[in-house]
Length: 117
Image (cartoon, rainbow, N blue to C red; front, side, top):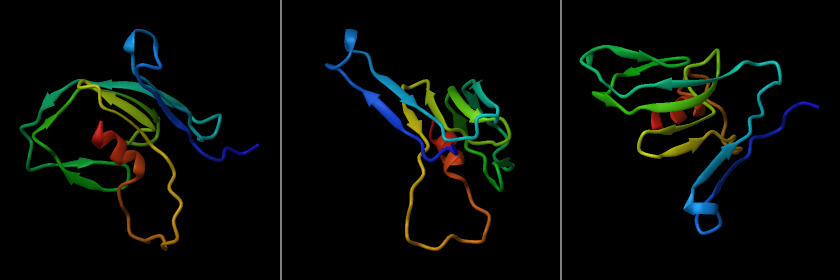
């Protein structure tokens, strides 16, 4: 059976033991696609004139990035889900719309997940 969609969930206090926050996500990626769990430390970037290579295009480098743990397909820059050092969690979901898809290269939803984490 081919994968169909992703699911993301969060459980918040008081529904959790010890007032914990639980965040989870499954992936609809193919079963033989490598999914990495990676850590990127916080950083201050002094190369602001340079561009950051995302999956299909480049964007301006920001002055500072937070530490982040990501789950991502090995072949792309972005991520399926992640959490940063400030406890912000985010997951990628497919969004079905009626607008036509643009032919130009763009950031992927998974690139936005990494940039938001």
